[in-house]
Length: 208
Image 1: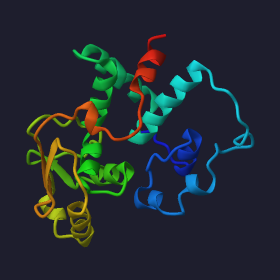
Image 2: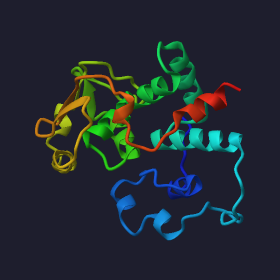
Image 3: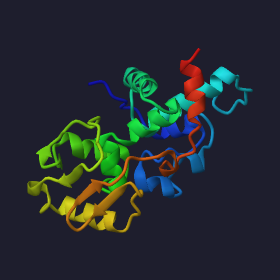
Image 4: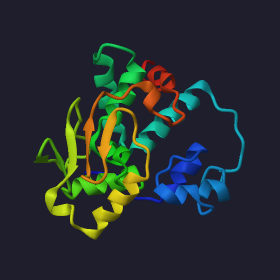
């Protein structure tokens, strides 16, 4: 499967804000935004007035990069969000939040969504007792996400469990860091998403 393999700090600089793609590093003075807060490339420091289309495009790219979604897959999420009853933009964000890799990240098992995605791909997690190694797997209400029994004794997951215990999980997840598991007690709502996202711009872009 195709995936982005270039330096992820370039993505934050391109969007002009921290997307927290490298976990704890993003909170230090090593963060590229702290050192070079302008777009990468030869013309990165030039200031240009952005059109409405440009604003809409940048918002779509920003959300894609936060969740690590490629273009075609993101479009499929949007089309699915349109078919669901309710506000399309909020439906889109809810579908992205319900991805297994995002849920693992929200549990606190992983400094970034990219690390959480890698852990899922390597088969370290189960959903309702069955191993799932598909990062895009959609989590539903009352699902139990847990670290696979064979992985719990590893030093890596002991460290992750300690880190998860110190983090605050969203209200829609009930996390037991000691047992290395979490249950979905409600589906995420718009207020649970703390990134500065203007989803209406994405809806406007795809509605042209």
